[in-house]
Length: 214
Image (tube, rainbow, N blue to C red; front, side, top):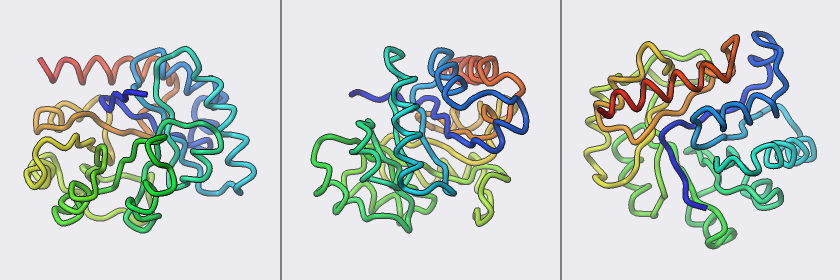
């Protein structure tokens, strides 16, 4: 499946239930129908069995939307549920080993918040990278210091041509500077999962992204 990294919506059931009360399957389908190019399943507190069940549910919910479905960390879960791709952090399964297991069945994103990480991701043939945190974020307890849009611009210079998605504290109020800095797209958690109306929030984010692209 071809992928569109313009707007990646990452799941967080806890934030979603606390703010809007939407069911996760409804929220991801609404996001897919409102401008998200990818949905990434990221639920760190689930067992393998629970994660596969949820992955199956979300993949089914996304059928017919044209939106890609990816899984955070777990190559095995992605393959078991028929996902399109996997996001690998620096402490996760090495990309070359993941490709050896999955072959051409999955595309891969790698966390690359440092120039040396980006260079390695390019050498290992990542399909795209996530760079951040751009701004301060409460979605990851061990997040590094924010690099800002200019830090993003400096990092992506080390692998020109490799699609780079900005992540970390991004919302409608600050998405445009990172697009203008050269981001292929943005990845968000709170901006959609923490919105009172995830559907409207996704639509507005997509509108801001397209406006920044001119």
